Image 1: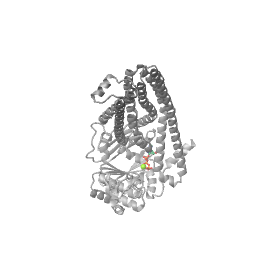
Image 2: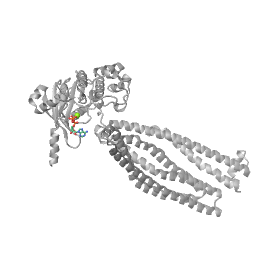
Image 3: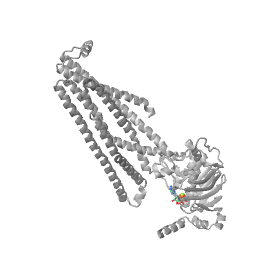
Image 4: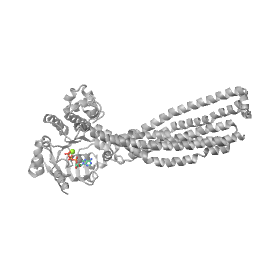
Length: 600
Ligand SMILES: Nc1ncnc2c1ncn2[C@@H]1O[C@H](COP(=O)(O)OP(=O)(O)OP(=O)(O)O)[C@@H](O)[C@H]1O
Ligand SMILES: [Mg+2]
């Protein structure tokens, strides 16, 4: 709001000018009726004013002069209204942009827990559609309400000087209008909230369907998805019909009140004209004012529906802002500058929130430059362990230290700068190939990008793309194969040049030839870095200085390949499958668990 102080002040000035012009314009008409068409002589000061301007007060001339004056005032009024409108749009859109920028920054800072809790479609809806509420609330709510009341006050003041009774009569509708507004607002709120939440569910559904389009097509589930979508679209339509219906009921109420008000004024004012209490011009003047007062009043009343929707949106935006962001490190947090890369887990336990311990008292340490392989059945907690090191989540119990410093004492950004992560499914962003590699270090030169690509064995396939490094990848990068995407991620990690490296199943999606290329690149990458590789290929595991065998959140054995073959039955069993990647991962305990549950 603060940056808009000047613009808002300008808007207030324009609105005031608008009110003054509104009050002035009907005077011309009243004067025409009473003095040019009627026979009442002009008030002394008006006649003197005309004289001073060198104008004749003869009735014909008066008609022309007052007509022109009225014309000028109305034209000026319209000009002011136009400026007002233009400025209003500028302020409104500016505020929307600001709120969006702030919300986007805030959403990026949510922790992964919160990202997990809010579906992407819902977040998009809040950021894109709900943020529009600021414009509606300020420009179509607060401003009009304040200025209708100001208009009302001004006109009441003027009316009182003309005819006290009529002034009060015309105000008679205000209290019932207020009560009606209050009552309706309360009724409307749940409808508006509900309608907005169906909006959100609809866009979440849409977002998910578009993201999972391959899944849908591969299972030929279009009809099923259509049905799910139609159900939500139906709910959404019904919710908005409900809101619209409430709106019309409300409008009828307001219309009835304003009509009653004008009729009352017409009746009482008409009687006063008949008994000679006031002139016809005065009555017309009062009626014109009433139009100006009731107009904005019923406009506010009619926008209450919209306002309720905007308030519902505002609550959703607020809720998104209320989600706490990751703490990027308290005052005095350490910058992770020269890191040797000594990593230590000390009795680390972790739960995703449902109480179930995904990691259970995990302890181990890695010397700088050591290469550690994590193996274990699916669901053992390997990816989770890696996520804790980059603080996607914080350990529920225990300590993780790097070079002897608790990782929560580092500035989050600088910690993540020092760890390169190649994920299980490599994510490629829209942009060119070069942009994607450069994501690891934004200021890298073209030459450095190419070097990284060569080191990642990606240069050759990139050269064969239509525009080489400048090939646009587009969202999802569907034009790249799994192995190619993985090598892009590895090139990115090369460029980041971090002392700690985490590779989560870097060769999972690859055939043997592609795997050889990737493994070759990875070996170059991990040289001199503390490396964690989650792997299920013997080719990778065998190079490890040490292998940690995980099962159900615990480290059940550790040592070299040869030693573990001797000592760990689980590793022996895993090693059989590590040799032959075509066998499924062992999930024995899950099958047991499933049978147990079924039996229970
Ligand atoms: N975001 C999450 N929220 C809740 N539970 C989760 C989440 N991610 C993983 N889990 C659970 O935590 C456990 C460990 O998952 P994790 O991804 O660490 O296993 P993993 O060893 O990497 O398995 P895989 O070899 O299949 O990749 C699993 O039981 C899983 O269901
Ligand atoms: Mg995993």
